[in-house]
Length: 236
Image (cartoon, rainbow, N blue to C red):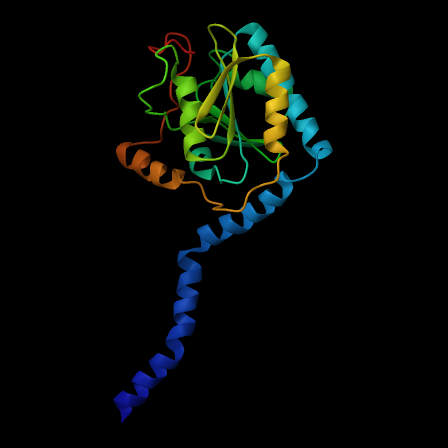
């Protein structure tokens, strides 16, 4: 009888303990989903809310294009870019053209890798993005462009690239790269993507699987993919 009472007591309370254990185990995932719901609402805001951030970013990209400063900038949309953000240096800084240019200026500490922009702010710099392994890509594409395509394959982020050799501006979105765009076309394309209504779907990037593989293969903190002068891919 005592054993039955004990078993009955355990069975009555197991759902409570199980629920508590699930909350503890999946706390990071629950927090990310809640944060992403808030971000999704903000990214479907009207054009006048998004325009100032795009204007500042485009001003920096245009100047880097003129000076042939290579850059790689990912703008988060509905997929959480935290897996890639954690490979870089967290900043959470207000976006300004001067700061963006300084981040990518050659031989500065954070110029290698990519910058992640979230909610109009610079979330992180010197981030590692997954390089696309498509076999039909042009051999003229360097590491930056392949990383831009790779991230746009894994997530719904829109990624801007400036070639350090030619100064050409390109945009990667949904696994496709549009190359050699002028400033007006880049800004129009970026604005149309970022102000479009978000489609319902998964809020967590498939990159978690990629990051797990990346960390498993690295004995220490990952270094950004080299994109500076002297790259074997031409630094495009």
